Image (cartoon, rainbow, N blue to C red):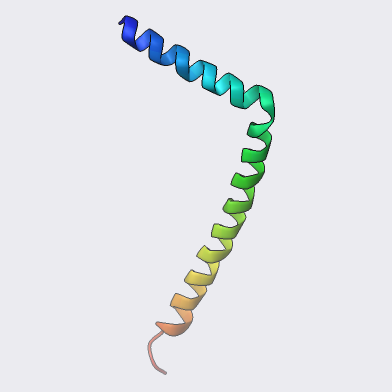
Length: 57
C-alpha cells in the first residue's frame, strides 16, 4: 500500500510540474491541432472511399 502511495505522489509531482509551468497550455494547443488534422484526414478518407469504391454505373 505504501508503494501505491509513493507512485501516486510521484505522479502528482509530475502533473504539478507540467501544470504550473505552461507545458499544459502548449500540450492543449498541440492536441487541438492534431484533432483537426486527423478530422480532416478522416473526412478525406471517407470521401475517397465513397468515390473510388462506388459500384460502376
